[in-house]
Image 1 (cartoon, helix red, strand yellow):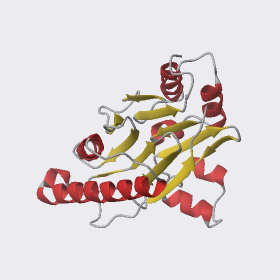
Image 2 (cartoon, helix red, strand yellow):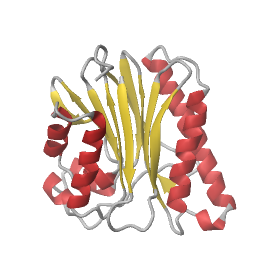
Image 3 (spheres, one colour):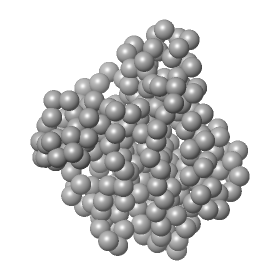
Length: 250
């Protein structure tokens, strides 16, 4: 298993409100996180950093994950804890009122990957069947697409594209999506904030991830370079996890 995390402020924003990372538990299992913070007075970076640090601490003292059910339970309980922490913090610190963050995170083992998401940060999978988006955006525009009111093409340029229907930390109770997939040799997960997915097409993502001449770090750098070339209006954050059973030395 190989993994890389990278974040960039972009070309326009004064601050980077994204956060995340790739963390190991005591048994060598990985947790990849991307969180895209939101809120006034730079509170978005507080929410995304609290999310990352809280999950990191929980993961670094967690027991070995054996089954998909254990992974799903761990993510569900951990995300509920983080939601409470952010929500309570915003109640007691007026400068953080209303802050929140998206989250997409994945527990990656030698048998499966379990993904949780809230908001519009995404997880994609490249495997022998091709390249596809695993997560559903919790956004107004995606709901309009799902209900047939607008097309996917219209959604790309919709004026309310950034309106979220769910976020972490903005409400006392949180809803999340969790799914588990088989994760095997040469499969690749890409987790990213909308600073990447709004700029780089799925075809371009698939092409970069499939380029055997690039290392994992070079692929991450290429994603950020491309998003910035296309405008870089938002922070850009991504994590790539590649299953390499026999090629750890590459």
